[in-house]
Length: 636
Image (cartoon, rainbow, N blue to C red; front, top):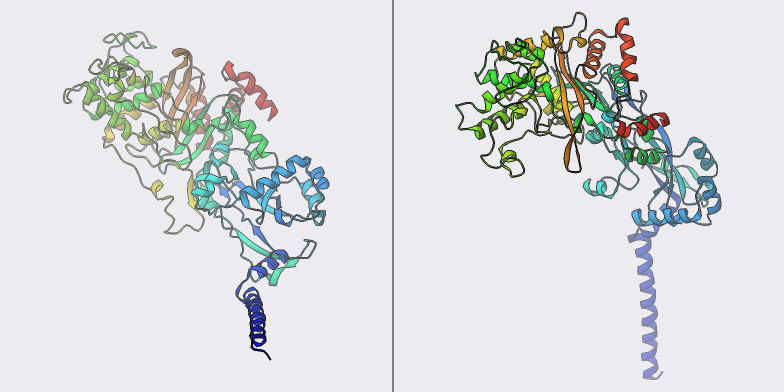
């Protein structure tokens, strides 16, 4: 054989051997080393179904479930599995057109890739679920996913309990991708604050399906399944009966109220009006109702109890008295000869005329004398031991901050506002008086809770707790305990420590409490009396201005009331704010009185049951939004 022929033969043999070796190596890689095709085969034959856990249940103080679970279904889509789909049939079932169908598929691919399941139609109605379940074999690429949803048996406490909603890209990023597209999380209220406790843990179920995408049963007898773990339950201080009474009394009004147990800081009831039925945000029409509520001019999703800020008015006067007593500037016997106006500054006017109604601290509180409390405020900020009005005002501000005003208290709800206590920077500003251009007369309205002070109803209720406890409070909170609580659970720790930021003598608190008791017995809130219960209280008629075209325009006063009871062993402290409703004793005080009677006695006496209906049926909504508000209630 010629030499050149032998050389060519060797080359051809080498090429064949090399090709065979490459093919063998690739087969070995595909079949042994690489699991790609195994994974693809598994994905075609095995469906990994996400199992959502039941969220934790929320109970009131008596063990009643105020937030529970039910089941609905989502229609899921995995885009790459869609083959020979009867699109017209699916669109007909869902009442959508093909344009919307294509848009949803594209959105699913963009947000979650075409290989992962995405929600195509959330929270199906029972009728639609039945139709889809029966005909799912005609819809390759689609599946039904069980979705636990929330139900509110009492249709109450919407602002407390909150709602859950689908996570967006921002939540997913903030969670370091713990959440996935299609997951739901708490978006407000306790649902948001205690999300890590309530949410539970997702599970995975492995199911076998045939070549027509029909589920045939469990894969490997469930050996690889991961069970879902239910969220932990919450026990709260909430009294649902008291909560429902409060919401009834607040209907047809703009305002809010808070009731706290002084010895623990536990919130017994907290309501904001107008409100809404929280079940509206759980069903198949939840997106529609959410948009509807968001565009509501009366802002029913706005929690006025922790976000609404108001001047406290005369409910602030007991705090001013405590400061003056602690500073040694007055005694309980200190009096002021008021004849209807505080003449040293030419204002403010006093609703009383004639001497004697402010002959001592007890009478001044009972009769809510503006001149008396304007005067003792000036004594505090002009105190000779301080170096001028600047230091005097800052010391006064320090007291107010210690009373829990001017900063967030830290309630276990999201979105709390801190209110505002003014300082020297505000008045030194050219927008106000300018540096060294003001004195105690310039700002004397602070002494009667007007001017630049802004507080929330929650803060007002907390100051009542502080007086009831004679100098300390617990951070107001709703949750009492968490199911299976361990030492590692620190979320409730801060609520169990008393906060004592002032060291005012018990005798000073007793003097103020004596005056507050006289408010109900012989003063401005006789309407709030409850048989056999000693109530300490203070009314407030808060001047209210709206800024229109850059100028303050006087509006109807706010009705405000704070109280605690009983005096000898306080078990409940309340603050009520009704916007544009006039005197504190007219509307706010009767509401608080009924709450005290309900909570401490267990029921309302027969002679007062008609009072519930009178208050509940009174429409005090501002004319600016009354027409919309009436329509809103009718639609609900």
